[in-house]
Image 1 (tube, one colour):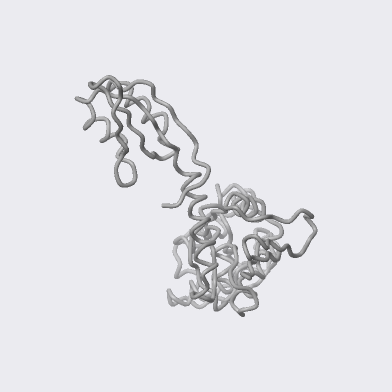
Image 2: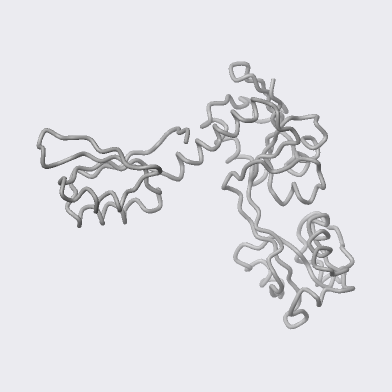
Length: 279
């Protein structure tokens, strides 16, 4: 039975649970349950703090898990990323008082507060900078004002939270993080199935099916607009001068594609959601 670690709370928890349900796995019925068995799929889920998942998976206690790339790298775990899951995105940057720092080298010898000392320490070491890391469990923006650090390294979205504390961003991006599937094993068939199913969910979320009718003389131009993944499906119609075309297109491009097809001369343009996929 494949043992899977799932975030039990935080920004990753809800989307991870939704993806697993869409991938055909049974979720927990009791939101307070620490584990749940899914005999039909031969898996068992363990609901853990996101920060602890990499440790459990890296130790071999659990086979595979969903967590943040930032948490994986910060943990120093033996687990490795096997697939990005395209949610829970975040960016890590340095910040300090306006004008105090211009570049990464300016952090040499200063105090840097962060909730990710492993991640930030590795980044600084790779760039030859030695700083004193001050580990805090969240809310690092106050560290400079309270005098425990000279700079901070934290998650940045719009930068508004840092600016509200009188701080400005400087230096390079530390990490672009997202939710990831991790494991310390590579030879379990169940992991390949899980990865394939989750990839199918991502495809279903990112793509739609577009069906339309188009004159035969315009097929080349129309299929240039909708090339599909390998190639579009083209079927004859009762009218020999027209064909039906079906192709997958990026969901975000749907209306632009429909406009382009209509302007070209296609008609009966229909868009359908994809509920599951294997590519």
